[in-house]
Length: 391
Figure: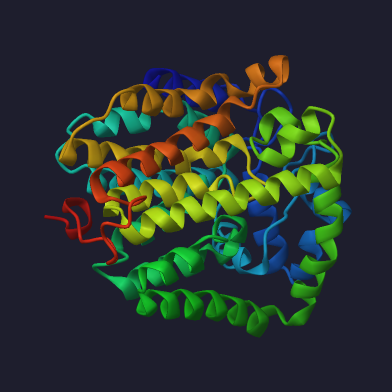
């Protein structure tokens, strides 16, 4: 799989014409909206990045191709702070730096979680979701690194952990459960740090670009919700959420939101229970897998988060032993993004979402077996672990 990833990237670059690939799309597809948004912000047009027509027109001009499809910008204003830095570089250079740096961060985190597993880097780099994320030029490596790093450091470096978790304000749908988990653990320094980081980033964007960028972002939300989430224009098979599954099965929008809400509540409750009583590894695995179930707006490349959840649970297995079927669960979670899109499109079975559910309940099972998470045997927050202490 690693060789396939390297080969696919090489073919993509060698067959491209300028910044457009052989299929007529910008190289790195979704990265085009990041680089374009940064360019627009740098040229005094920050509030227009949420204007789909204006954004598409600039994309076409910057790629010198009027036929390229539109890749919309749906992020809150704090992500402009990074986008404007990337836009200072030529497109392909920025894309390589962006993906290379964030992939390296995620890889180093895997090494920190599994310091004794010499082959962990091969398994991580060869994961199918890595190829999917690279192909889309997406930010999932960064999102996973922030959430995973925050969980890893939550007990040992609460201020640093809080800053990492607070930075997720750029992709807030994956931070919904964070305040609950931190509060359950009673780590109020991390709670304060996360709040200060998120508020600080929002205030910084306000200081630089003023209220118009926030107004433009808020005004764009109804259209984003309708086109991207509710109508299925993105493709139900690409969105492994409970909401998407219900819609693909013919359910109404209200029914889909109701099911999504119930699943999100259950996922947060399970993750909170584990955060209170489980090991650091199970806490991390639960947080990363549950985060994927808490939002209707999640795509298969975001399942880089599940890859780090697998790393956390693999570390716990090395430390405290395996339970039956656990290797099968982790193998399924690792492989699911490889066949998830086409199988979901053909059968309607949300195989990628099921992987997140399976990994979350594996974390719960381990916390129940080894930490008494369901019996109330322990009442104190989870202890420092081998991975968390870095020893």
